[in-house]
Image (cartoon, rainbow, N blue to C red; front, side):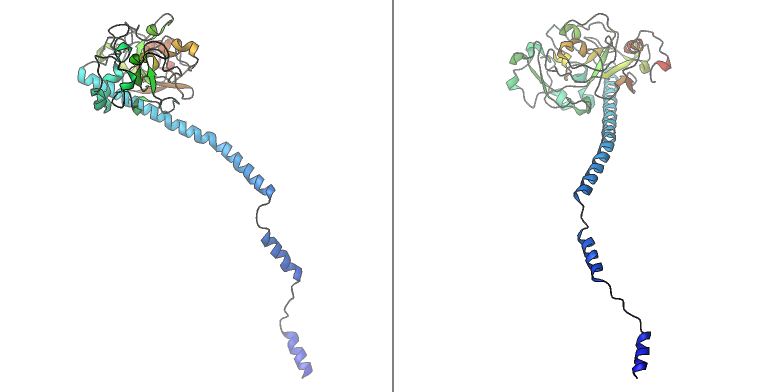
Amino acid sequence: MIGFHESFTSKLPQRRLLPLNLFSANDRAYARSAFTLVELLVVIAIIGILVGLLLPAVQAAREASRRMQCSNNSKQYALAIHNYHAAFKQFPTGSRLSSPYGYFWGMTAETLPFMEESSRFQTINFGAGACGPHLIDLQTRGAADPGSTPIKTLLCPSDIRSGEQLLSGPNGPLPQSGDVGLLYPTNYLGMAGSLDGDIENTFQACGGIRNGDGLFYTNKSHRFRDVLDGTAQTIMFGERSIPEDLGWGWPLCGGDECEHYITARAGLYMGNHKPAEYYQHLQHYWSWHFGGCHLTMADGSVHFMSYSLDYETYNDLATRAGHEVIAAEDWPL
C-alpha cells in the first residue's frame, strides 16, 4: 500500500511554491505607481511646449474671426448707406458745418435709421450740433444722449479701444464742461478724396475739407450718377483705428459718432499713436488687423487692402470722377 500511495501521489500535479520575495516585489511596484518629481516636471514641460505651439494658432483663429466680423460690419454699414441713397436719392452728407464751431452731424448720424437705430436718431438735436459751444453741460448728459451707448456695427472688434467712451470738445484736452460731448467712437470713416499739402491744424484736418473729390465731405451730397470712375473702383469708406489721443480736439477728428470722413493724402500705412503726429495720424486708414485694413467700395464690396498698396492707385481709388484707369493687377478686385 505504501508503494501504491507513493506512485499515485507522484502522478498528481505538483504545486509550485513561489518565493516570498516575489510578492513583495509586486507589492512595491503597485505602491510606486504615482509620478516621481522628475516625471512630473517632464510632463509639465511637454504641456508647456504644446500650449506654446497651439497658442499662436488659437490667436490667429480668433483674429480671423474678428476680421470676418469687421468685414461684415463694413457690409452692414455700406448697406445702410445704400438704403439711405434709395430713400433720399443721394448719399448722406459728409458733415454739416455752418461755422468753424458749427454742427458736424453727418453721415454716421444720418444713416442711423437704416441701421435699426431709429430711436437713437430721434434723440439727436441736429440744430444744436455735435460739438462746440452748442453742447449741453456734461453733467446733464446721460443715457438719453445719442452717443452714450456704442453701436457694434460701427466698431471693429479687433480695435483695443473700440469699447471705450470718450469726451470730445472743440479745443484742448480738457475743454469746458459746456463744450464737451460724451460719445462713443466709430472705426469706419467716409472717403473725402485726395488732398494736396500738409495738415497743419485740427480744423484743416477735419472741418476744412470743403471741396473734396471723393464721396463725402462738408456740406455736400453726391449721387451714384456722380461716381463716374465706377462704383467698384471708388472708395466709399474705410477702416481706421481709434487714436490714443481720442479725446483731444474736435469730435470730427477723434473718431466718434460725429466723425464722417478721411482723405487719401497720407497714403495707406500702419498707424502711429504718438501724440506728436496726431494731425497726420488722423488722415489715413489703418487697423489692428495684421498687414492692412478694410476698404469698402461704392458698390458695397469690402476688400482687405495691404499697406503695400501703391500710393497712386490708392489716390485713384479715392476719387469719384478722376477718370483714372486702374489696372486689375494693381489692386485686389
